[in-house]
Image (cartoon, rainbow, N blue to C red):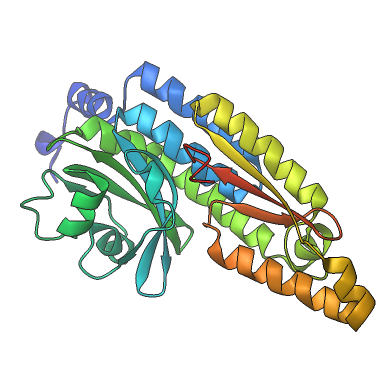
Length: 286
């Protein structure tokens, strides 16, 4: 390129200014990054906080963290109009989130009713008409997507895309390390009940503290279940403790299978279990 075709310093500065969110938004992003760092290795806490904060940051009607599991995308954290859809599973093929995972690019839908890339029925179920889907990538690994949704067409601007770009790398790194830590053998041995494989009492109370803090910040309800098994002693007395242990394991497996990904099911005593249920709105939901 010859010197005469080089952009002027003023042109470069204008382009830079156009690509960076305002100072108020940048400050909000820095504060969000600080909060994410405080959550450390709590994967569920990181995902829940992220959805809450990016919804506020982009003035969206809702936000979702989706993780890819095989040929499906799973709602693993959600807020706003998507808050009641935790655990929702959608086919990767034919969805904007699946396309985002494949392409590794930020995708924007202006109107889900006319965009051929989206799962229209799923959009109607959520109640969204527009969205931005951002890949959560760390190094060469796509750990999921972050999606903000609007109830009206064309709800998001280029500034919203730039804000999500700035947040996505740190979010993905935090999720990547939290997920890796949670699958570490030493970590599992230190924090899991040996009989059932569920979180133990110490891990339960650590997650409960974090869940309460998150619920207070987001003004979202939080449910806690305390459960115990009836008539375990007669089983132990009649059939022996191995049979009693088997009953405990079966009960733990059943509770774990019916829980959402965002829930924590823990064994806190001999026949006592507890469950943390974020984002529920009534006793009936619990």
